[in-house]
Length: 224
Length: 252
Image 1 (cartoon, rainbow over the protein chains, first blue to last red):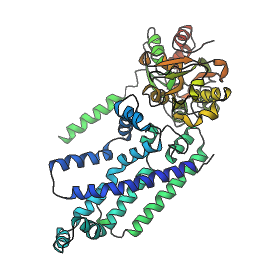
Image 2 (cartoon, one colour):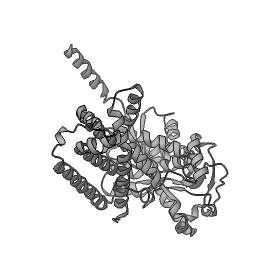
Image 3 (cartoon, helix red, strand yellow):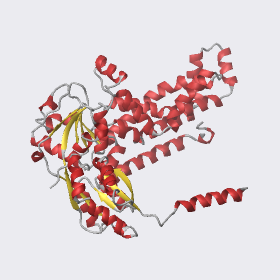
Image 4 (cartoon, rainbow over the protein chains, first blue to last red):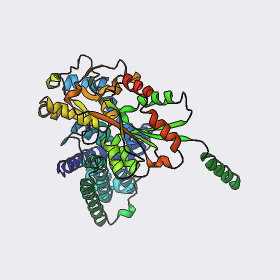
């Protein structure tokens, strides 16, 4: 049986993740694009970890952290009555962690590619750091911002391993489209699996199509 | 230099293939993961054939077999999947039931005492109940039937979290991410889970029998047939039955 709930949930998760990461990534990327320090190198490596780690590593540690048998999970449940495992909130945290580099990297490489004179000119005309970032730097890296947004969104839609490990398959809460496809294939419901898969395929294609047609300068945007 | 490296690589590649050594590959349902080790140890007392075990959810393994996975025997958690393989011509003969699985209610959280009447599940202190996914896992299907029979399913539905196999379901319970859950008795009585929380037997008349079946696959006919049949027959022997009984299964 085809349900819309897994597709809506996937959209909701992807949109929320993208929104949160957009806010989180810009300050991080700005900081990374400045002068290199030891601390910066360490933090940058941590931010990039989800790119190289298998999703199972993140899933496993989140399971451990969220478990009421361990300190953090216990504290959370006692003080806030929240249990993150098997909940949309937990999934959202996992997605934010998991997709972090997909937002930070394009923005950071966009900022680094700008001529320093741009920034200097803005400063010498009396603009603050904040004004310079919002009115001068960010408008000049629109293709990078778009790339970051699209990649984060698409990567969250495509998330499977982490959701499988910490989701618990709850309809409307943690049963995303990628999990629904897996379930339907397992149950030999190839027709249903095909419908979900086709919707995701077409959706992903349209997103990329939009990105490439809007982004004439895509060739200049380096991911790293 | 390059030639030398190439020769070494080639040699390594060739040495991987040793067609003379007999080896069986057995696909085993997740709930049997501990029991199969004992079965093989018992079998190897008289027969030294090496047996490689691939564990997974029965549905998953069925897909792999249909996709051409080189398995000689399939030990499933139910009748449905082996029958499906038989219907599609992947087996050497019809599947047979080797043991009946038992469902238990298990919790690893301190202070939670599982009882067979299941009323505990309605309590506010139980926030998450783990079951295996009923569409593909026989133990999950049995758990849902039991909840329906006791008139509890609708009341606890929002608390249910589903593992993709009985292994993941058990992991949810053992790590206390779920407060309580339904799993296979074979898992809670295994040595690895000993002392982890408390469990209660459930009335086997209140859920459909979990008739665990095995089947000899067509792949066995490509060279391993004698050995495969020997191990397959062993699964129905008195020695094997004693092991099933000890490991939390019912045998007739």
